Image (cartoon, rainbow, N blue to C red; front, side, top):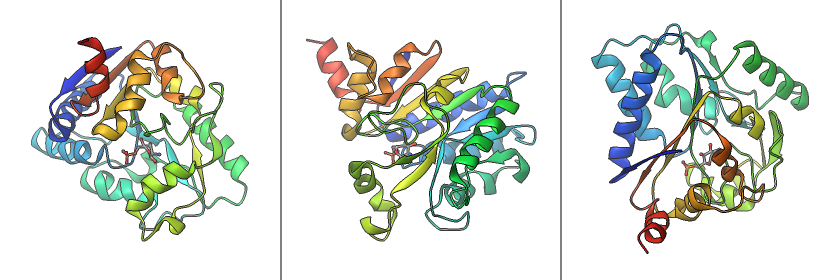
Length: 248
Ligand code: GLP
């Protein structure tokens, strides 16, 4: 595990964008897994800026997002489809057909999960997967207790996750109760993972991921200890528990 410690959110966003664009410039890297949430917003802004400054083209890149809320249409202001258009897709030259997110309005949700998983398999491998982390240690929307063998699936959101995400909605009641998410096994199959974390609310989850003695389904992010190519880019607040233990 490679840990990059940065000062704050702004530095995390810059360092991550620089790293991503460099990796995407390498030959053979054409599938990027994407995350949503507050954490990567600044990184997307920097990525758009760097791509424009360096004339970097996304026309041969495919993106696969981790998750989408069940019950929200592509056009819903809080859907992850809308998030991705607003923060990235509308500002780069990626063809629409190359961007992939689960369909939260699918009539047959299990069928949609199978379609999504097959789409990822058909792309062969996610070269680089971007991740955030939930305060309870979730990755994607895989909440505590999710099997490490899970593939793309429908999940029920933890109340704490709905509370945390209520800030993006009018109120908590508007936050969907379910989501479609890549499974933990799906995430672990990506060649390389870059996880971003900022702020003290992530300190406990990050401590478990980096220093946790047990790899346990109770804290989904601990599975990442087993990934052969993981980079964590985290700021001082998010790393404060890790640092306090290492310095004691
Ligand atoms: C969300 C997403 C995750 C994200 C996490 C943290 O609900 N499904 O992919 O990493 O929770 O979100 P945030 O970055 O807003 O703290």
